[in-house]
Image (cartoon, rainbow, N blue to C red; front, side, top):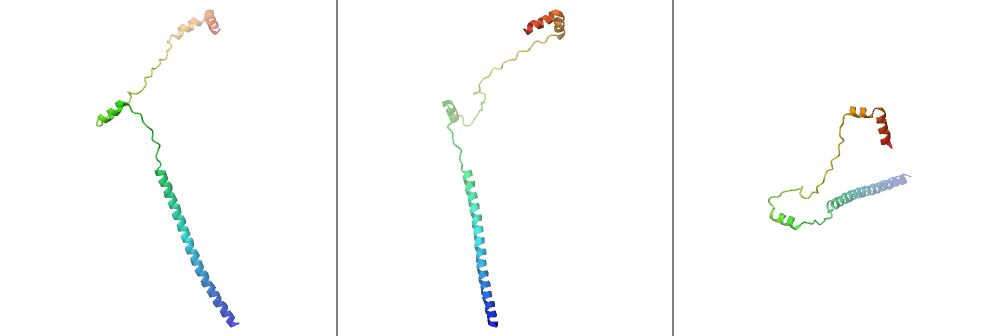
Length: 124
């Protein structure tokens, strides 16, 4: 029984040693996988950043008159901005102001039967 007990102990030691080796390998692989995942995430983030920066807006054609082109060629040093030149003129309508009358005269005119008759006639 002594030998079997000793052989079992050696067998357990061998198994523990093999388990340690496999566990170390598993740990190393786990670290490699996490590093690769982090690298993949950082690379995809860089790709998104590059795509965002490289977007260019659609360019539109700008019509220029011949005078504007000649003015740009000849007057490059002196630039005058005349913003009011191309604006439309708008006519302002004046509001009609009611004449301010003395209210006392109006009260005197409307008092009595004649004033009530005027109000009645105006209502119809």
